[in-house]
Length: 368
Image (tube, rainbow, N blue to C red; front, side):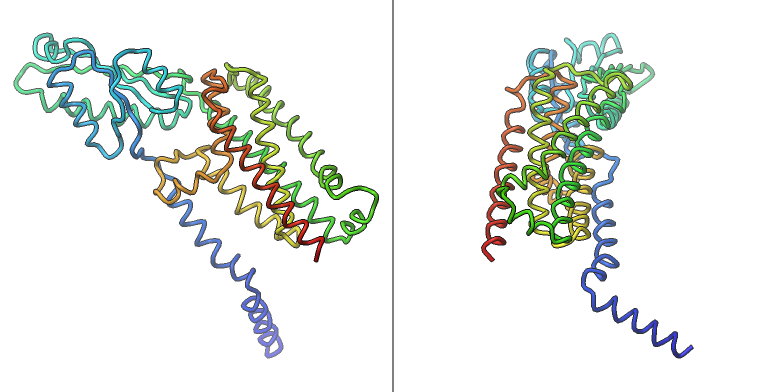
């Protein structure tokens, strides 16, 4: 028993002396609980909504004020035609539009029946459902407050889902899965491939070969780029044929955006390979620095607007966020490059930045 206690003490000492093991045991669980606790929320927060008021009376103004006062909704635009609704959705300025019919207050008092239309961006079906429920509840509560006396007023709320009329969940998870797979295969696998060469001591052999360093790096990364492009095409075809996810925009533009994202992921994998000294470290960095942020902070599963302000700011450095926005704009909304050039520019800038940092670190390593 004394020998066992001595052995047990030795194992505890080994664990406590190893900083990386202590981080895995204690810091990572705390980090995951905090991240999941703040990210996973079923409520809506500050969803951008526009108003198209054909009536323009005191009653519609009061209902708009009531909607704007809610914590879940933020009235950001006043529209004057149905054409402006479509343009606002395409520019990603709003998530819903509320349309008041003509003579809203007059019909409210005389006919005792009024119509209210809610038009929603259903490219994110979960958010569209939540917004529809919140706006309908606020409008019905307002009508209930006005129901004084025996004659009751009927408020008819008509939801209309754009870009995903049947609220098919595949419209959300197919683009998200595509971003996740491309990130994992391209960045994670490429970084591990290069680190493996360093661990085995074969990288030095390659560096003294007739091949130039840039040719070695390109040769290591090119297969993953080709495989990732094949994966991207496969996901798009399966999503379309099996799950009915449309490609309303240009297929060439879709492939171009996918290629830009793949190049960004390759450059990120190259950067990870320069930082990591072992395959375990590369996997650790990729898992908690790439995989989890891609799942949680890209808008793939949970709306970014629901998250705390700090995490919303953090989402701006997540490449998959821009890729997902571009994918949905092309596939579900049929938009062209004029609507997604900002997202493409950010991905290209990230690619150049990651390659620049990687080359600088690689040269320092060669010089040393």
